Length: 268
Image (tube, rainbow, N blue to C red):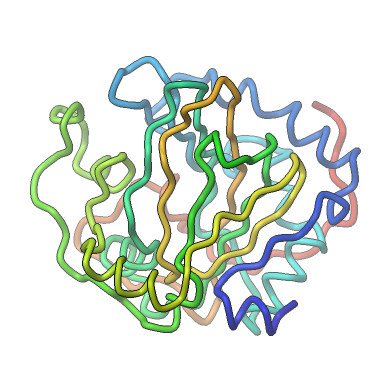
């Protein structure tokens, strides 16, 4: 599995990787996080539909326990060859008929430019909270594109349409990606390597490299697509100081290595 991950830049695991009890505990904690009105919650351009909620491991005890499960923590340690902590966590939501797209981009450029992470020694882990199909806006990857390193270093100026009055850091979280990859680059790499959209039932778990080129289309279906996502960073890759740091819910300041937890609370 590690060899496939390194070759393709991603790895999809079936729901059996998490127990049903753990999955049920996770999903029970989600509604109150989506309902909380705070700067951590990012809305779509319509100002009524939730797009993302960030820093969930900082505010919810269940979400803090999940990345310490051996199934996740052990895999992140294997992939990175290092002790790890959670640099960022979030729930990404594609609401029925209203969930907007994510343009073609790589994740690491944001963490390099905004958070001072010197190397792409991170791994994304996404837990499917709903079934992911071809209709509800699945992630689409250019296979093996992570091997090409950074494909852009120049960010768009100004604020995206609909977010003109928002704080500057919001520009990195909207449908109009700040660090978009040009269509000619996407076409060249897609023709060479192919496209893939990992799909599966709720409870599936998707690992992907911070430099893999990816996007997702709007949700055109009546079915929600939600993912709980953790970004694990190696402790040897702790951030350097940056002049204008993003809020702590986007870049975790506590880099203490995580220790395993062998059961997730069912208190919620």
